[in-house]
Image 1 (cartoon, rainbow, N blue to C red):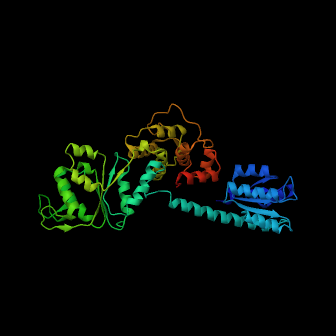
Image 2: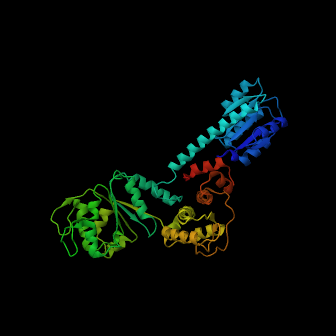
Image 3: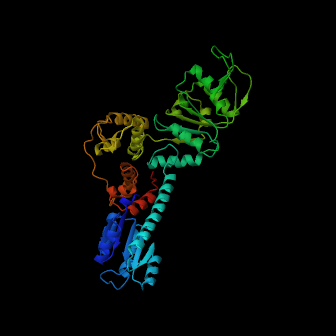
Length: 452
């Protein structure tokens, strides 16, 4: 928080003091109020980090009650706000009462501007430290798994599931359409396991010719076949002590499925052309976009291998079924490709955000990433449009989001969308949604929505 952006609310019915403090805090944005109604209106509007409150206010300036009510109301709305009560010389008891109600500090009249500036600066310093601590605490809980960007309840549930499963040395089978992030989840399983300091080896079983796949997995001895000019370890052996990720496991040919099943049962490998049985300690994580039950029914996948691989099964939803994730991921990719391409595209038009939310995304996250890369390169303006994304213009664009009267289901859906539009800025998101910052914090906690 820079000094130019600091806001200070002065609550005092003495116009002379108001002018004095405006002059004393010329480096701040100073708002003034002369009574409780005006003070609370300005407070809700500006949400300042620090306020000074005179306890003696109209309609009964000889009583501290109005000042006490202001302190209580402000702290009920924003508990983190620092309130400095200003009292007369004989009001020490009332000042201590205000401190007991949650005020940060007190100051006796007559006002010495230099002393009060020091108190205000210190209050801001404490506020900024606490704000930074809250931001860092949120940052630790922002991304459920490293590399996974999501705000959708469907994916957050899967992330929590992975966090529980990963430390246990069981085989994990990830099911989902192409481009849904299966390899990222596999890496997360490895990073959260006791094997995280060992190797993570990945192999795409559909990308390697059948004649070479066995050698890639199990290795070969020198001279085992034409072109085998040296001894070569396979991926299983290279992953010893760590994790082996078998992507597109449904494409493994039946003869190799038999050898893979034997390895899973006995935990030893035999290189092609070799006679030595080599023990290997490795965790297996598999993934496929195929329906393995249908493959088993048609004889294309061994049932006994399936049950070896499916100790834990995780169904990953497609992007079209992840509430709000298209917009959240779009902003993440925009920042990524701005850096890579040296561009400064600032965001998305309202029509582009509507188009992103309405597109079915048959290619899932991979399709979204490709469209964003193209959009950043091709965009001529400061904001990406549906044309840049090669998406159709939406027939209508929704009104600005407002959660003041939204139901709980709408809150869960719209809060992540609002946060994505303002890059996770809580005050701006609160303004966009039509709620106060403390209310938004309460909603985030209520819905277990994490903020980056």
